[in-house]
Image (cartoon, rainbow, N blue to C red; front, side, top):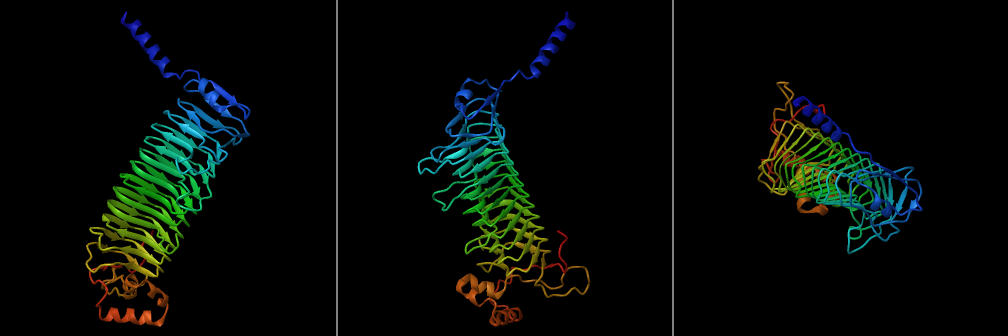
Length: 411
C-alpha cells in the first residue's frame, strides 16, 4: 500500500511540474488589444501582427506574454501612455512604442510597471516617449536590448529613457538610449545591475542615481551627454569597465561623486571630458586602475572628500591632472602614472625617487579665478608653474604621490 501511495504521489508531483496549456491569441490592428487581454487567461500569449495600433492606456493585469511580429507600432497619438503593467512575470518583446506626448500632470511612459516583479521588457523600440520604461515599486525586473530615441529639448518638459523608483534587483542591460532628460535614472534602487548600455546625447545625465545602494554599473558607454554620470547620496556602489567619453561643456563632467561612501571605481576610461571625476563629500572611495586621457581636469577633489584612495591609474595629456579647493588633504595618492612627472628612478625599480605634486599652480589660480583660463596656453602659465615647483607656496604640499610610476600601467 505504501508503494502504491508513493507512486501516486510521484505522478502528482510530475503533473504539477508540467506547465498547463497556454493559448496564443493572434491580434491584428483592427482588434482592440485591451479586449483580448480581458478575456485571456494567465500564462497566455498575445501575438501582435505588423501594423499600426492607435491604442493607449492598455492595462496588463495578469501574467501574459505580449510579443510583436514584424514590429507592430503602438501609437499613443501624443495623448496618453501606452502600456501599464500591474502583474508579475509579464513578458514584452518586439514592440514599437511611440508618441506618448507630454503632460505636466502625469509621467507618461511607453511602458509603466508598478508594484510588480519578474517583468521582462526586451527587444522593443521606444520613439518620442516622455519616459520610455518607468519602473515603480517593483523588483526582479529586466529591461534588456531595447532602443530608446526621443526628442527632448529641455529638462522641464522631458523624462528619462529608463526610470526606476523604489525598486530592487533590476537588470538593465544592452540598451541604447538617446534624446531624453537622463538616459537611466535610479532613485531608491538597490541591489541592481546596469550593464553594457550606451547612453548618448541626453540633455542632463547619461546615468543619474540617488539614494541607491549596493548597485553595480559595468561596461557601459556614456557619451556626449550634458554630463556623464551623477552618483549622489549613495553607498556601496561599484563601477567597473565603463567608458566616459566626450561629456564636454561648461559644467560637464564624466562622473560626479557627491556625498557617497564605501564605493569603488575601477578599470574605467575617462576620455575627453571637461572634468573626468568631480568628488564632493566622497568618503572611503577607491579609485584604481582607471585611464584618464585628454580631459580638461582629470580629477577635481574638493576638500570635503576624505579617506579616499587613488592608486594605479594612468594620466595622459590632461590639461590639469588634479585640482582642489583646499590645502589640507585627507586622501591617499599612490602608485599612479603621470605623464607630466619629470622625476628620476636611480634604483631602477620602476618607481620615481621623488614625489609628484599633481596640483599645478595654474589649476589653483583657475579654481579661484575661472576667467584666468583665457591665459592657460600662454608663456606666463609655464613660468608660474616652474617657479612654484622651485619654491612651493600656494599649491597644497600634502597632495602628492610619493610613489609615482615611471611607466604606464598595462590597463
